[in-house]
Length: 351
Image (cartoon, rainbow, N blue to C red; front, side, top):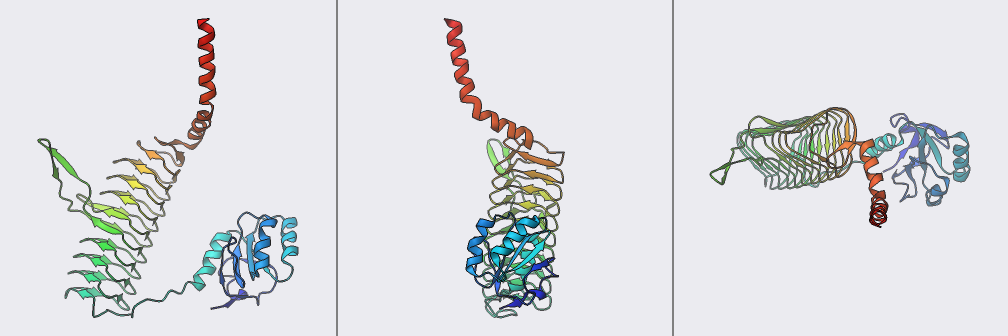
């Protein structure tokens, strides 16, 4: 597949600085692994690092719009007239829009409902739904227009899936789960398993029935091997447009707001409330019943043991405002020297 540069400039929010709008683009590549005929981008520009890309025969390069004119001219000279240079306020956004032109994934199975899939008689399907062999769709399930169900997916009783939902192989969706439009769930994830709820009775643990459900709002993407537990009573909610990385555990009755980013290996205990546009770095642990307001960003491996009620950056365990956390980290480096001085002082006092 190939496309002319002029056909993607406007939609990718770029402007042509040099070269030809008739340049043929055969794909998208990274700056570290440049490929002939492809387009790539640079966020932080160092001329010497572009040499490899220029020698590879890339067709076009997207640069930040705020690049200095002298650096831009230097890059133009290095690329000569063989490479088209484009400017963008957000090169990463621009390259993602261009990549969408080349992301034409085809179903590995025939469209429609496979004869080898099991569908209960009460299932309601929209138009253009594709269900692969060995999928299991239970009673009273509704699946919206254009949705795709891959092999070995289980969908429990009474689930509702919106339009253009994609469920990849091996996903398990327990009964009563509600999934909005344009949701993507990657392989191995389990949505709606019982929450971890027990009460101690005479020295023994007695299970609290988990009779709630999970609601996943539209535009959510869930990575591979993610577990989102059903509520004990009520709902576990993932807000509109939130993106969840691989290997994340979300406990029962958690409420996550809109546009959040949850990185890999995060653990969120039960009944946590998270606002909108919160970023949770990899390996973060959040204790139960914590409240985190909108606009918070948590550094990787932070431990959240108390409510965070002001927007901003936090890190450490227990999590603290980023400036305080960084000061503590910096002071830790000095501890050996401080201890040595204390030992010397004690020795001198004794003498």
